[in-house]
Amino acid sequence: MALKCGIVGLPNVGKSTLFNCLSNAKAQAANFPFCTIEPNVGTITVPDERLNKLSDLVNPQRIVPTTIEIVDIAGLVKGASKGEGLGNKFLANIRETDAIIHVLRCFDDPNVVHVDGSVDPVRDKEIIDIELQLKDLESVDQRIAKVQRAANSGDSTAKKIYDYLMRLKTALEQGKSARTVETQNEEDEKLMKELQLLTAKPVLYLCNVEETSVVNGNSHVDRVREAVKDERAEVLVIGAAIESDISELETYEERQLFLADLGLDEPGVSKLIKAAYRLLNLQTYFTAGEKEVRAWTIHKGFTAPQAAGVIHTDFEKGFIRAEVIKFNDFIQYKSEAAVKDAGKMGVEGKEYIVQDGDIMHFRFNV
Image 1 (cartoon, rainbow, N blue to C red):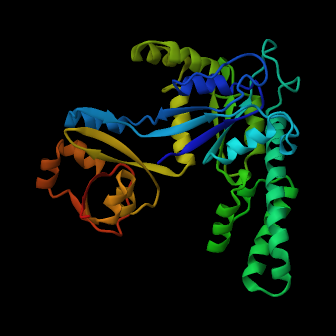
Image 2 (tube, rainbow, N blue to C red; image 1 turned 90 degrees about the vertical axis):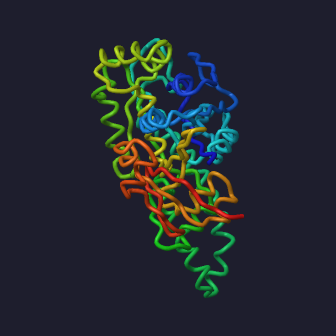
Image 3 (cartoon, helix red, strand yellow; image 1 turned 30 degrees about the horizontal axis):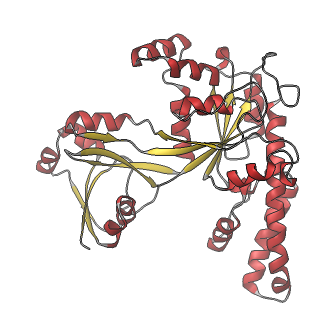
């Protein structure tokens, strides 16, 4: 599944430094606005300790983790919704992503210039929010114009669409994002998908802090948390400069010592990748054999045939059944044969909802 998160934020808040830590693809990290003109795209692996545990037991020829695409999108300025700066390109690039990682500068450093002259993460957030909301308002107004006449004439379906559009319009005009407007039925959900609104995308606010604030945050972070408390959004604290230092260390042991000195249990980028995974409402199942142990990405709620279709469409079309082993059972009994002997392997049909960590083998006929 080609799932994509876009890293956004005002110029010079640490987006490209963060991107460099996340991906082998290198964005130019420089102390001036617009150092990233074209969006940089990198594919990153999702950290999952379960994959290593399975590999230790199965000893496969190769290990294949699951991945997410991360896009570093050019910095935004006021007026982007009207094409100012790199506005049109920026907005088009966001539209292509599945979720947004919004980087906010939450550190004071006179040596790093701020595009607006001072550090204020809530103001910075609102600048981008307003530009996205204005663009969404334009899309909603266009759809209202198309459906209004039919709604006024008594068409019940058009009236429902019109009512939902008006709720979206009211929220956007009040400076609220589309994600805060709840869908009340399947028609609303379908319309929301059709509109492809920028502010409907799930968002993770990433507070970029100095070294002394990576554990407990700071007053800037507190203000961000207060500002987004009604958005159903996650807030993560990370030090992009520290992550850059960690990424340059050569061995796992060196990285662990560095983290221990800072009072951290894992790199911030690992927390970020896991948070992005949750943000996209994803989960993982595994296939395990001598040739490979592999993690597969699916949406939560996928049935067994849908999960099989991620491997190949023929698996879904010709699905017969799925043989399912729970991860903890595999770790306890240490092999597929031992799990079978213990009566712990499940045989599931088309209605089975795949659970996170399931180890699956599909039977199909095409």
